[in-house]
Length: 306
Image 1 (cartoon, rainbow, N blue to C red):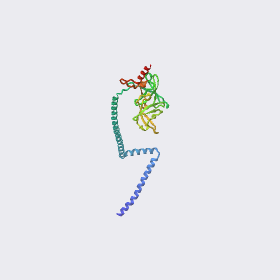
Image 2: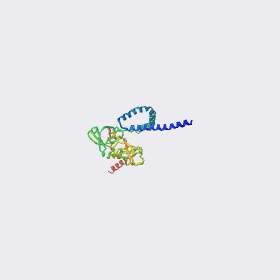
Image 3: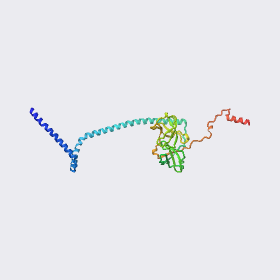
Image 4: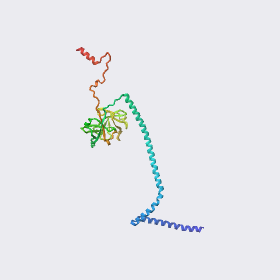
């Protein structure tokens, strides 16, 4: 028995070395075959690839299936995250809707209690933007409405989202609108909810700065900026934008109007308020029964002296 084991061990060692040598020769032959640059060898390589590679599809099937499962799982995870975000946004929208309805009802009640009469003359004329200034030092656009349409110099121009500028120059068929971003633009504004008065100054940028603020520490990003009506240039309450801070900490206004798509502008008709020539007689003193006012007494004294 020991002899048979020794004989088998004597044969096993050489066979292993022989097999290893054959494998090395085959690998060397494959290497040389793939390195040889010959049309015949190229055709042979193509035939080998066409014959061997398709037969390995069954081996790659589990790998491809696993990759597809991972991709589907990642896609499902993204869809789940988007669904959760949409749910949160929907809840926020419902809260905002409820707040908007409450504010609308409150505004209607206040208007009814105060018996507010809105100015019927504050209507608008719609014009088409024909051209812009095309200059970095001048921010203006030209409209296809003019004096024949009743346009008056100084009227406000809006795009439906917010104030854009004012009429500055009226022709018979066209008019020019100086934008809020122009360096010559100065607009008195009111910042809500703090109620502070300030001035929006154009500087040829998309977000003009806000100067002459009464209490800057009371401002918060997102506060609404409305026209104050001071100076009689713009009607009060027109939306301009929201407060924002630039990287340098300067207070600016993020304009509500879409300056990238100025196609149609609404020109607000504003004929101004009635002028008062004698402000001293706005509040007349009441005359009590049996008494006379001071001016009448003076007149009677002068008559008796005469």
